[in-house]
Length: 193
Image 1 (spheres, rainbow, N blue to C red):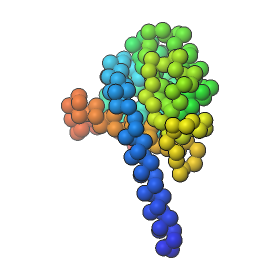
Image 2: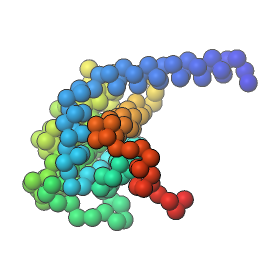
Image 3: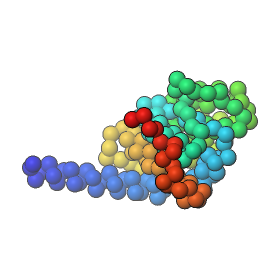
Image 4: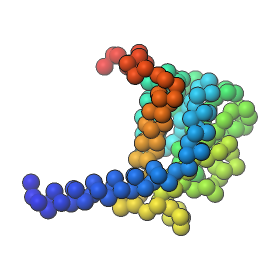
C-alpha cells in the first residue's frame, strides 16, 4: 500500500469525523428531547424518506424496533394502518422532496390528531406548515443555505450519516433513560438469520 493512499485515507477520516462531530454538537438538544418523548408516547412510529435518507431511516426504524417500539417505514409490504396516537418522522434535508412532503400532507389530512416531526436542514421548507416541530441538522443540502455546515463529502452525505448517528444516539439514551436491560433486548432481534 502506498504512503500517499494511506495519508489520503487518514486525511479523509479526520475530515469526516470532524464534520460529524461539529454537526452533532450543533443540533438543538431540546428538539431531540422532545422527539424522544414523542417516540415513547406514540402507539406506533412511522418513518418516511427517499434515497439514502430512507436507508438511514430504515436503520433507525430497525434499531427502535430492537427496543420494543412498534416501528414501520412507509411503503413496507406489511405497513399497518396509520392512526391517531401514531408518530410520523419525516426525513428530508431540503424539506421539499415530493414523496415525503406529500406523505406528510396525507398523514395530516387523514389523521389530524397524529404527530409529525420533520428531521431536516431547511427550517423554512414546506414541511414547516405540516410538522408539529423540527429537529434541525444544519448541514449542506442541495439548497446551499448560508448557515449550513459545509462538507468535504459529496452531495448530502453528511446529512445521511448524521441522521443515522442521531437515531443510534437516541436509542442509546432511551435504553439508559428507560433502564432497559441490553441483554433482554435480544428478544426483539431477528432470529431467522
